[in-house]
Length: 265
Image 1 (cartoon, one colour):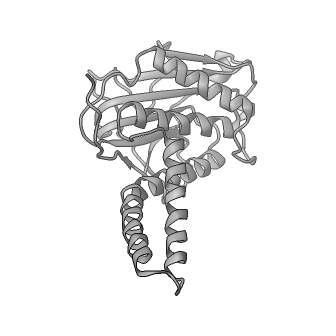
Image 2 (cartoon, helix red, strand yellow; image 1 turned 180 degrees about the vertical axis):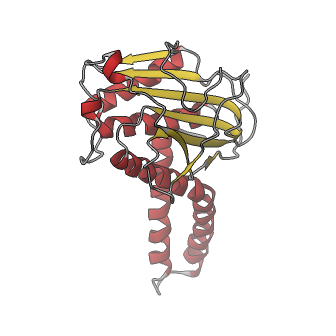
């Protein structure tokens, strides 16, 4: 399958069709779907050792412990034996922070970039997550199509708090992905996760997104396709022409971690 810029809205087959009773996903809903699928892709394709939420908590815990250790070491009455133990633990914690720091900073930057993009161009229809050496050499790809009425995507000024509806929709999406076998094939070693969005040419966030006008899949490559349909879906209103949209690649590329994989017996 080839994905060229300016392609028409021909009927396509989707691996996952997610229907919602809401009239619109809203900017927050779109953000959390993308964010949760990023975490799913990284974990299921063995690019991170645990789910992203647990890793975030672990990273925050390490940072807190490091500050506590520094505070304890600054106390003049600490005995030499205790001080040596504290220094040893401080080095261990510092090394663990260093291993995770780049990944966590990139993920934080990606989330901020997605929120800025949704505020500036809330009517995005397509987002592609590509896992591989480069966008042109994908090992796996997940194409997300959001179908919403044009009158619901004129602007987004709300916050990005995760509602119960968004939580339920994300869980439904992850279950559907697992049922299709998504993530069942993995490749050894760290890979990169690239994010591309189909947005209006007026998008102006050069610190986060750069035009990728020539982006297209290799003819032989077939991505996993997901479609999110709102209650008021109408093909005439929910599928605006894409010839005025171009591809943008997010500058925040996530690189998977090298970690020991448990051997299955």
